Length: 397
Image (tube, rainbow, N blue to C red; front, side):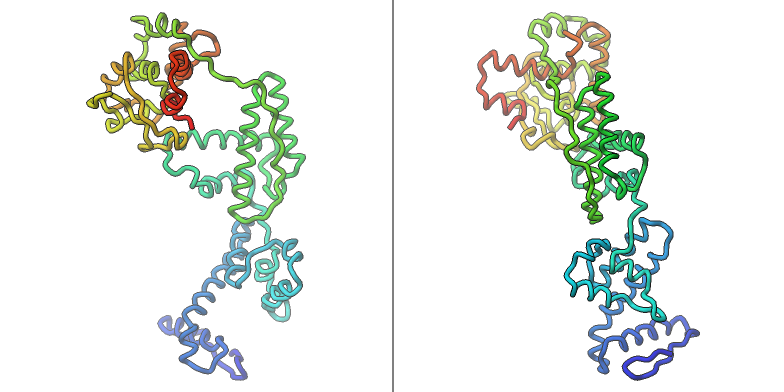
């Protein structure tokens, strides 16, 4: 038995299933502050939907998992017409706003409903969202950053972030992100500083700090946790830039292009190395070429660097590069591209660099395959090629 607008109504527990929804819906009509059935009908669908959403959110709040409780509290607050704020933020609102929230909490036998109060007044806490759980959610929350990436690019995007979080957890522990303190971040920075003193570069340290900060800030923002995370101002001053030196023209001609110098490489790796010599293209760009991007039947044979099955490094990376000399001969042998390395450019670079190192084909210990790209640029400079043309060939802005 319930009383509504001065009248008593009986809601029977034992009702045939086909009538149960009708009885509940009748209860909704009676809750709409109108004696008119037609007016009630016009409002019933919306009210019914909101009531079901509220019940589902309340039921979800009866869980021991902190993350689920927190999510359920946010949903229930939204159903009640409020944006979820933690208790401290609620206390900062104008007094009228606070009173509206307080009045929205229903009483059960004279006692405020704890689940409703947690949702509307900010008593729920997402204490279960640890650093590793935050990373799990980050992959979805930052999905916009991976649009258009190939599987290989996606792997190379994910791995540094995974490494950074693993390093952080190893130092600080897998604690709730709401409990991360400035001292925790300084401990992590000190851990990296010890390694820098032992000979590691600041580049790796700064990447870890950036990735940890990005993961935590993205989750904080997208999940609307409103946490004050101490992740800024931690980077190390960059040391002298560790640029890859270019190969000299003499080394390329006398060593890399010697008749048997590349005989131990597989045919596709050998062709990509030669294709770099007179194009300056990145190894990953050459590995990604498809038959549509290799145009040998044009008046000037060329390759077109495009976002085919992958994401370009930048908007300016889309460009056309003419083929000539050893690079033209290498690409002619593979008019459909280099399928062996299309999905794994890191394997390509590792294979060629190991071969060059093992066979004494690196001009110095600091050289690598990428030095062919810089060598091509140096040769363009020496030939007096216009800066605009150089920028177009290299994909610079």
